Image (cartoon, rainbow, N blue to C red; front, side, top):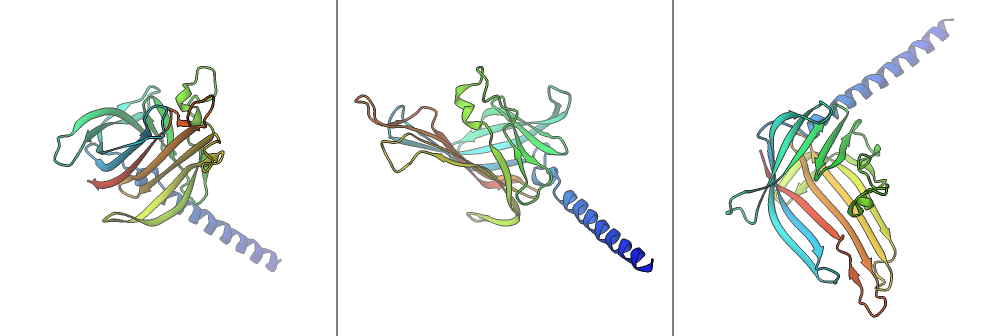
Length: 249
């Protein structure tokens, strides 16, 4: 009888310890730590935007500085608290900022939803633990007849956490604690064969505690091989961008 009580006490202690650790980890992984939303907060990135000249193999890269600044608290279309975020562009740091667009971020408590160009992405989701996955583009209509063709490539992306609480260096900036969100790394066809149709979809983001998104790279590429006396080319839907944080408050 004594052994049974001792064994039961042991398992209860182990269970309590596991639950306590899970709760502590859960608290440490709060969405607000990886994406603090406060009026006036901003992050400035070096933005390198990439595409091809229409129906050619000629690459075009345009570089800017871009600032995302949290404006004010409002209510989204289903009555939840949300923050409006303004985006500003400038060519160099000596140029004035020019307003370029409006975005919206919603911290649901369990996830971070980010709305850009009327597309709602689930950027972060609890718990922030290694290899946890979720459908980050599940709010985007990518499959029905009414889906916008340009965004069908976003279907069924599995976002996954990697390198949780890891350091990251961006140029002269060293960050102590970041999390990598691996979104997609998929290749169709053979990119080394100019006679093969090729599609590449890649997406990754890094978030730093106390700051927000500090790095992003996105690429969608569609290569059409030569046919009917027409040279090979990249479709108009081919595009990519890299955001690298250079400053924040």
